[in-house]
Amino acid sequence: MLKKKGKTVALALLVMSAAVSVLLAMPDRKNAKSETPAILPSDSVIAVNIPFKIPDQVTFAGEKMPVENFDIRESLERELLISAYRHSSTILIIKRANRFFPVIEPILEKNQVPDDFKYLVAAESEFSNVVSPAGAVGFWQIMPGTGKEAGMEINNVVDERYHLEKSTQFACDYFRKAYAKYNNWTLAAASYNGGMAAIDEQIAIQKENNYYDLLLAEETARYIFRAVAYKLIINDPASYGFQIEQADLYPPLKYTEVKVDTAVTDFSAFAKKFGTNYKLLKYLNPWLRKPYLTPRPGKTYSIKIPVEGMRNVERSEINN
Image 1 (cartoon, one colour):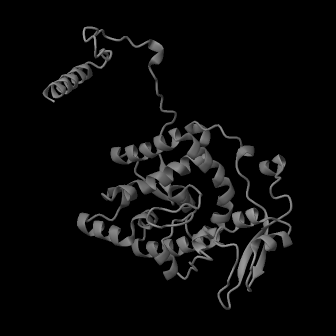
Image 2: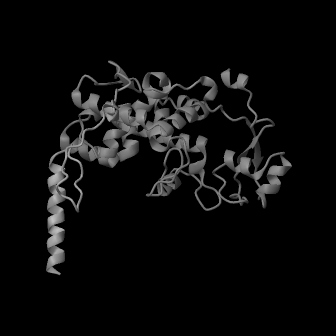
Image 3: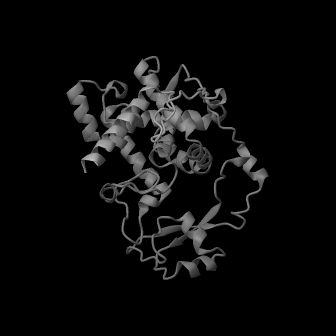
């Protein structure tokens, strides 16, 4: 037992000794004499060049981001670097934005919410119907209790948090309320992530009411910078290392709508009745959580039906 312990200590010391010199080769445990420095070939050195420069003027929702301050500039650079080198995910965000912005933008405009708030969707969910560990759902990451308080139908048959138009309206209602409280769009956006109570607490503690001067929880502190990073990249992908042709962006989907106020017992048969299939019906209506619908009394539902040729989009149509 003692001999075994002695060998373990000797081996640990040997490993620690090797770690002192960065360029030493790992020693042979049986022949400790061969501690020859290892020479790295010149072609093994990785050169990393930052492929972009941070703009001198950056805004969110018409409000200036003070990038002349080192902490603000470095916070934005952090998110740009993460997004620029997280290639596959960022490429998908750029592609999906082209599909979903035409749905989100008119709702923001109707509610007099700045257009830049559409980039919060990229920061929240990357334009996917994800479910967070805490139970927040959909593009806008809405918690069940919060959604129900706002009048959304949320149960095991229908979950309107997955309904893009209705969840965007929910977000707009929140933004307008937050703006009325803070008279500042940046703080209103940040509170969507951190909650008004948390923002209010930090304003009271720190005696500051500017997002860029507040020390906040990390996720909220990064939230606006992440959204602005996506704004910069989506609007000018090439400047951040993404060579994406307009024809390669995902086009908006074409559909019509059918009003339903009675039970649907089988969505597979329902889809075939309208010349489509269950898969596409559920893709366009992710808020329908079951293969059937039991509507609330007196409520009418609009179900999206893909139009003929929705899948076969011509490249000429994509370019227009």
